[in-house]
Amino acid sequence: MLIMKIDITPTPDDDTVAAIVAALAAYDAGAPEELADAGPRASMWAAASRQAAQGLPPPVTPAPRWAEAERARRAERWSNGIVGL
Image 1: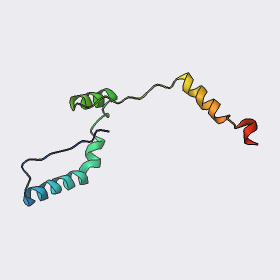
Image 2 (image 1 turned 180 degrees about the horizontal axis):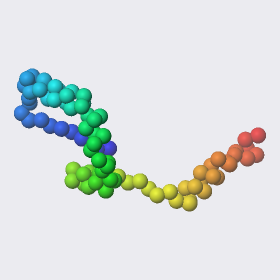
Image 3 (image 1 turned 60 degrees about the vertical axis):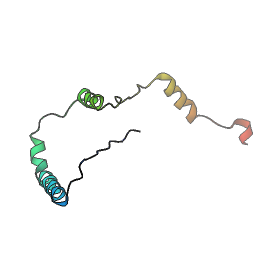
Image 4 (image 1 turned 45 degrees about the horizontal axis):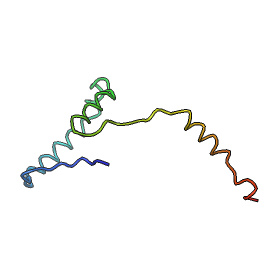
């Protein structure tokens, strides 16, 4: 699994960190009103293109197949047979 790693160079001083935290807190306080007017959410195509731009593989969601459904049906009816007596 790939994990996003952010490397900040040079290391910020305490004043810069405090300013960043204050800016994020101010953004978070006003976020619900601003996000309501933001419009429609991005599509899955946009999310996949952002991941591709970062060098990550696109998300893979396998389509369900009949073989998997049949395997699940057989698994719920499975028994040990005469050995399980």
